[in-house]
Image 1: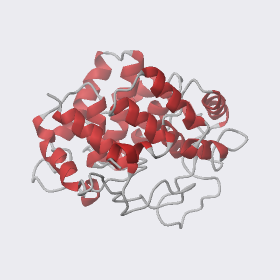
Image 2: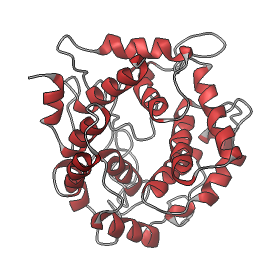
Image 3: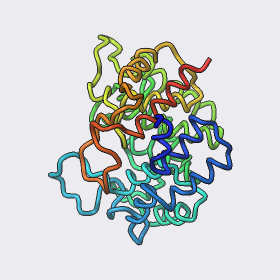
Amino acid sequence: MTVTDWLLDGDPAIRWQVLSDLQNASSEEVKAERSRVELEGWGARLLELEDADGLWDGGACFPASYRGGEPGQPWTATMHTLQTLQLCGLDPASASAARMISLVAENGRWEHDGQRYFDGEVEPCINGRTIETGVHFGIDVSPIVERLLEERLDDGGWNCEVENGSVRSSFDTTINVLDGLAEFERAAGGSTAVREAIRGGEEYLLERGLFRRKRTGEVVDAVYLDFAFPYYWHYDVLRALDYFRSSAAGRDPRMTEAVDLVREKQQPDGRWLLDRIHPGRVHFDLEEVGQPSRWNTLRALRVLDWWDRP
């Protein structure tokens, strides 16, 4: 069995992206496979866990039952589940998506201060993800975009720790904001200010080779070299490269070391392993740490295909 055959033997969430990103299948074939996300596999399982009010586990960022003291952060609340459904490719035009997003808009409230879900919160990393989800599912989130444009730091990126005195950007926060702004630009055409903010955030990452400190060249965090899925708010090299692949930024020589890391992690059988699952309560495991990962293999192959293209 080839690696592509193995990928196509997986969940509909994987199969439609293989057809689209690796095999250049017809739009009709891709659409037909993508429609199965709503009805089968991981996407259907997540939708079945939705509460009657449209939320998951009773909360926006945290489950209603969360009182602290758990290992890691719980990932079962609405924001993380919506992100996973988006990554799986739930069709925004599907009946499930339309029902889900209208209920989240009506009933979702952030734990911070009871803000309405698609009005956003105060942390840029949360707001970046809210923009990405909102745009994907057809919600106007332009006020949150304007807020993030004003919150960009002098070095080009963003940091959720500004309220605690930080004046330097964070890899984790910046990638979440970039994902949101890039989705907004693709859908709405963006503006000069949005494009400048995106380029500034991208330059922040590129100046650091996607994982090194600008001043010393040291690896910022060894976790960034592990390929995790789902990644939630966490940064890693594969997530960053997959962002650049899908963005309008193009290839940049400063990504070379990061691309080499992806190549080095390929196993002799042509697949990539799941290096890490970020600790915390989950609805169910998608894959097993240390085992071949369809998510990482799909993403790594499409990154390398993009990078190696003449």
